[in-house]
Length: 449
Image 1 (tube, rainbow, N blue to C red):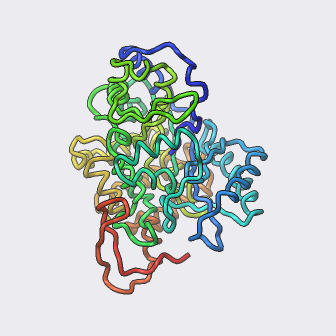
Image 2 (image 1 turned 90 degrees about the vertical axis):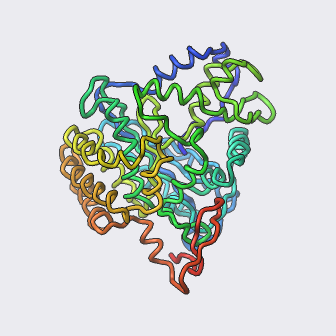
Image 3 (image 1 turned 30 degrees about the vertical axis):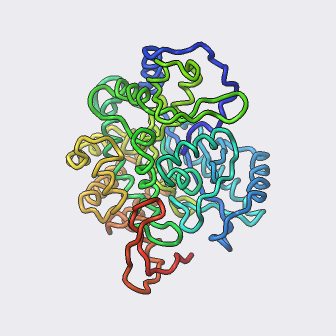
């Protein structure tokens, strides 16, 4: 959930009110910055746990202590904390895949060493398989977010406090048409994103029991709703579509310099510019509003791919980073990926991601879905051919090849490994899930580490 971590600072900055046409022009100008794809980045969210007792929550006091220690060390990446105490590292824009891998790997080694001094470690998984949501950060932003998201059910609290992801950032692409053109990349990412969701699904459990979904984290985003966590329609110009979406999305909160923030119910940003109540919106309010929208692909000048679950192992994050970078930034691989996912577009039924059948099937079934498995296999093959052209080392290409052998070729994903660790005691019986109506299986023991 890599929005800005600031509570907004001085709410009077950029204090001149903005009009509806000004908002549309600003969004068009800042969210797609086109040019040759040159930079890549990654944002890694991790659950912090005690490896010897992973099912027990880490106390707020221990988290506060270890984060204070981490802020005292030098890192190349930005270190931030999620509402539930999850740790996030956000790399600086890197000129190459291997520069990105090198920076983040070094930072993770430093972070793990500090955590180990207090007996803590990092867990790469899309949703905490044991612990209930519990908020660590008490800030006006997250108070308002919790109030807002509670209106659509408990999924928001799960997303805030018990989820983790690998978010890959790539440039928006050329202004001109072609394999690396921004319109082509915008279309590609909304279809390839379902393949990435399925291939890297790693969150099948809540409360130690199966939810019936391979990526429960993606299910949670879907349950939050299309206004907050959905993409715009893919018809027409991406800039125009995103600007409309921003204007027609609900305002999460109206910030104040003191006291609790107001949480309007159903007020869109477009309506706010017209009514100018409870006060006229400013440029700062627009900038903040953009950080409260959580579509699976968020345009922030570059494209932020948010659909990949956190991955197991110390270096598991490198595989989705490498595959995504190869499929977007190598022209041959990008053209191949476009051909590979085009047949999947029909399953989306022209509905915005992730609220369409293609994305639902990806989150529910992972690579057990035959078409998604076939597409993933072809995408991994294209990525493996492209990685040497991007300067990837043998270690990186070997990791991608091993992932393909272990998971993609077998129609599996990391969620299958977690489910395999469950000991069957009787045929599962379905009951309502913890997020409200989601089937989960009973009759299985808790996951074992």
